[in-house]
Image (tube, rainbow, N blue to C red; front, side, top):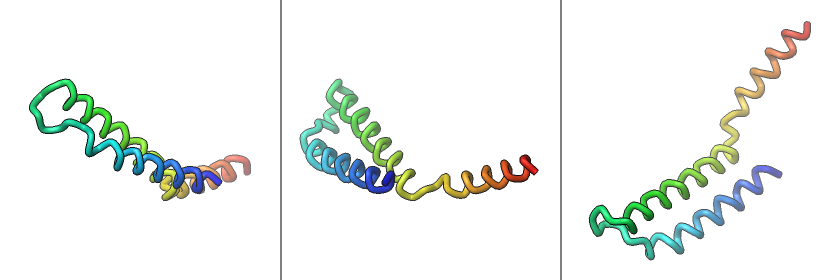
Length: 75
């Protein structure tokens, strides 16, 4: 269930980026719109990276090792 929700969130975030990136004013020097565009893009990419982390189940091995350690402690 979580993987499906992560995929929907990734698709929505990518769609939002595809809509917004052409309208962002980047490359006009160090102005307020440029700073906003850079911060907005970095936050959007962070959201996508976080959801990819969930989809790829990077923490799966760590969780398995923790469960093994807990079983060893209970013995």
